[in-house]
Length: 74
Image (cartoon, rainbow, N blue to C red; front, side):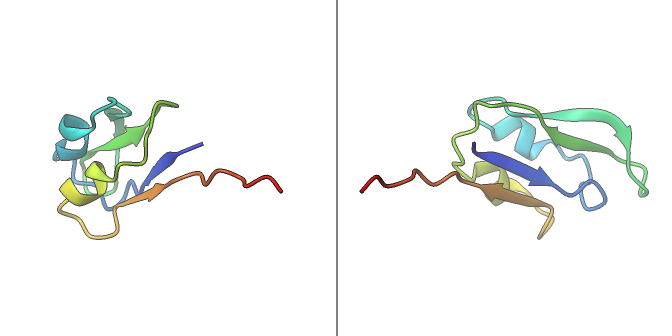
């Protein structure tokens, strides 16, 4: 299953990933990180691993997108 890993301690809660996700897979959480920001959280099975969240994020390394590769038969 495709999914996104968001590093809570690197997120500044800018909401760019939230606003630009075409499938609304990311939301601003209610938890606060060590810098005092509400950080974004991934919460959906609808992710298409498009990478828009990754490219919109101004914090290098805060978001990693994982795409499930289809298994080849025979």
